[in-house]
Length: 289
Image (cartoon, rainbow, N blue to C red; front, side, top):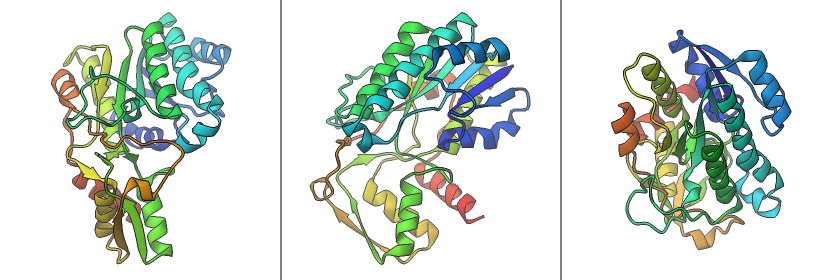
């Protein structure tokens, strides 16, 4: 069985590469834009024809959330059009698709964790392009699985955790918003969950059930809580001060409430999800190595 991973140099792709050795029953093909530009239909079809993957994990995305507000061209290309291309060609070659989406498809006005069936209402260009990517993929490939996640971090790439650690080396105090609530997601946990779904499907332990699923670590916190926990785990003496969103304006509006309900993915695929603080501790250990 061949698994094609797109966006392999990003956070999730790097974690998939790292834990791929635990799944020796699969042959992995890791690609990024220099190997395969998924926004080019002909390139994608040629790649499928040559390599004949059985599964595709699409980690590629345009994630410069604030930049997208000024120029959404590349966000639309990578987040909206590319998933449709992948879905169409994967359907042709009978490959199963797992596509990664985001909590930004919601407006953040809920007061209870979001279910997959809840009303979507993105309020940023990034969120709109990701939602349109979901719609296009489902239209082109009815057997696809979409996993929405939130607050992704790891030892790789650019993310909130690494930003906080870098700034803590430069400053004595940091100001972080406390009125945006969600759940951090350790990319290493998500990577293993994805590969376990594929592995269990191949072993006939679960049935591949297409549709939208939510995945983040267990628990709830604010960005302020997350920053405090990061510095505590790292044993930094840098102080974190809580501020309101209005005190830290950004071009793109973030969901004030981004907690995802994970009951569906746990029920259908038997996925076990760690508590966010435990996963943060594990990631910090990896960084310290």
